[in-house]
Image (cartoon, rainbow, N blue to C red; front, side, top):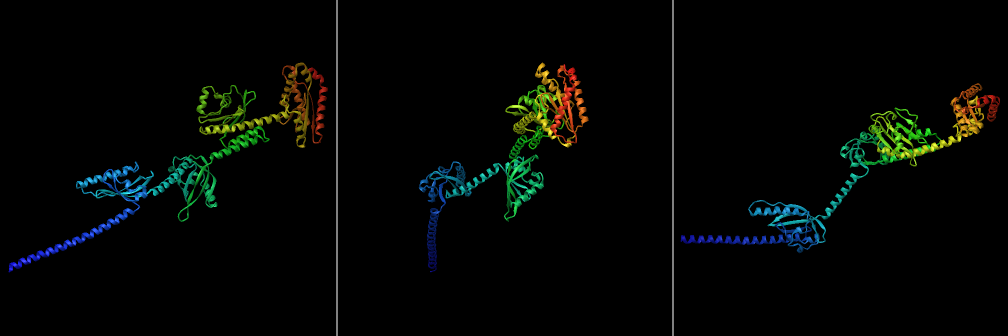
Length: 628
């Protein structure tokens, strides 16, 4: 009984276990179904995402060709291709040649990972990110940004079209490049200073403008201390900026370069502000107007010289005016003007200002050996330092003894003065202390000015010649009758009293003309004029008023003084030793003096003339003895 019960119990236990197993199997079946349902739902959700996302999702063979296995419909919206047009093809057929290496490196890495997995090497592949250009169906390149992963021995690539963003980036880049190029190459100097006046930004042209190699050499410097001749000038500029409500346009400034030379600029500037609206500093543009100002100054110099030439001043005053005008554009501490005589045999230094030498003589042109003569011979400008001058001396082009003072630092710059290509003289400047004072630029400047100077000098010389001829006797060089009569009226004033008049007549001039010719008669007249000049005072007025008549006006001369003067004139003529003898003047003279009592000047003149004829009559015997 016991055995039977035991067997029954065993079977019951087995049955219970079987039921439990059946229950577990039924539960497993139920769970599997649920998982299948979940998987189906997940696959459906994944399908909906991949089919409807704007990103391009694609599966590829895990090899170096990465052939398309799957690609979602958004590929058409992004590239124009239908999915079926790309399946079975390699993306390398569509990726830009310059970008293929990026994907190829990833593929090589993943293929190596696949091999390691096959060899049971535990290594999880990492997600890779790349950018590349993909050719769309119209042949245009579109930019994509992609993530690449290994999924069940396949490549999963999710790509997003970033073409629009790239275009924006390119526009920004081009804009920055354009701004940078503009900043780097703009003709003016763009600058920015902080509120303390320290330079915090300047373009290369600005650095170059001030004599620096690059912006880094100049940034950080205080503009008032380094670029103004006086910091006070900077304060005046800032006051002007403030007065104009933080904006200035075309404001002229004279600043200082690195080497200390002046730089004339036009400044257009304004305040810039921080986020709180406070003045943060000044920014603007400098434009170098030095050349423009030099040209304006040069034009003004030419105008002033022309104006002086047309004004009623003497030639000597014109020279001074030329010197003064030129000193505004070039160093004229040592300056001279030399003119060639009409017969081209002599050079005369009409104007000579020099620290060391004093030249007021006329030199023979043929053997002068000076730098001025060299320019007249060549007709070309010359810039010569001491070494060049020494070489010219060795060549025989210059004569050392004719050159005046020379120092080791001597530099000489001269240009020809020309009228219609005809050289009439030279104009020169000189330095004894700075061999670098003049340059090629100064040669051009002097040449440019020289034509105006030459015309001004020639005009004034012609004027003076005309004036000279209108008031002088051509034969003797003395004043003529017209000038004498004008002076007679001018001196007819009590402040010149006593005023004396001397009349002189050359006896038997007609005999000399008829016997020896008019040329000899002219020699006699010129010789007498020289004798009269030699015995006259500086303020006396000598004139030839007729063929053989001379007159002398002696201001502030008493009757006794004029009598002695006449005796001196006669004695000079009697003691004359010129040969031939007929050139020794034989004269008659008469004089009269105007004292405090006022007489008509013309009647006074006639009275002196009558006195001369009295002398001519009473001394006829002496004349006969003296003549021939």
